[in-house]
Length: 188
Image (cartoon, rainbow, N blue to C red; front, top):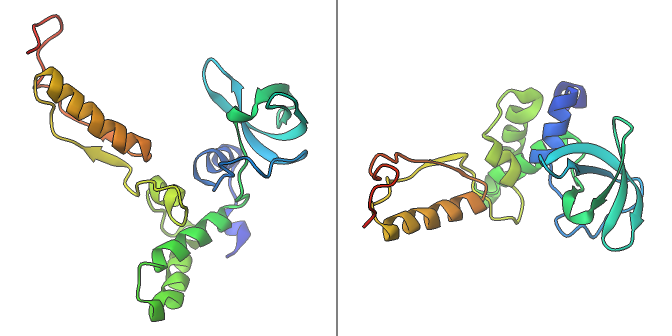
């Protein structure tokens, strides 16, 4: 793939690293100098790109953010992208999509999908770019519309269970709440 064709502007680069790049989920490969996405503000959850300056005791790291700010942050609030260029993500996605085809046709389909993704000719949903070719069991669908909850405690809990399953795999949920009674009304 042509790297210049997929070059990202600063905000796009940050979104790529934060949302779409494959990460070291176990954080087993963290080293000084590694590029990371770190929580820079615990109150807001704001995340910024930086580099590890030092791995400290008690599961902490010193990180220098790209704006020059130095922070100390828990390793729990750091993600290390294993993919550092969009081309790597697009190649992973093309290979994963082609894997659904007959074995004899996979190479051709990987090339076809790769061409389509190259230069952003086609941009699949974000969940596809995040989940395809990973072992994370994420959904490939961005949004789900689920049935309205039944107006009872059990109905509400059933809906919350369904929402939890969808959201735990990265999907978003929309629903019509008009079946529920107004605030302060008795719930059966």
